[in-house]
Length: 118
Image 1 (tube, rainbow, N blue to C red):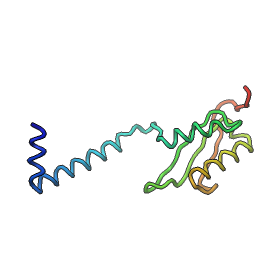
Image 2: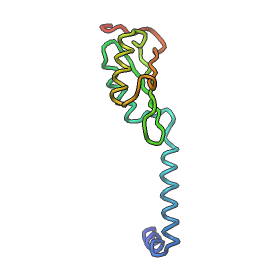
Image 3: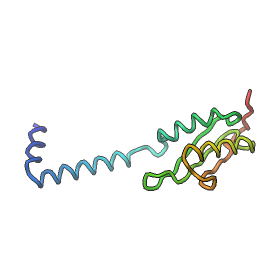
Image 4: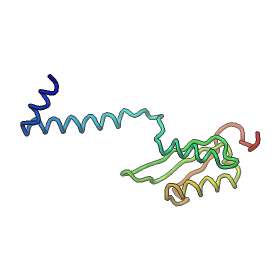
């Protein structure tokens, strides 16, 4: 029955307009319903990769996009209080996302420092 209604709607121009409008509304609803605390695939992969940097420890990444292009990144890492680790993280993120150092913020994760080998 639903198939027949869709078929009838497609036969008329006005029906096609309604179907297109519904498709746009559905796409917007899906985009807006994404949980705020859900990481994007890019953020998840970056977090996993950067946590492999020696001395980085646990890492979380937040990527900021504007019009589909990455414009900034925040990296929160246990080992970010060590200058060498902070520079390594900044260089890696800059290379991977094609960002300048000024577009990347590296901060220490709250809690104890990460010491490799612990």
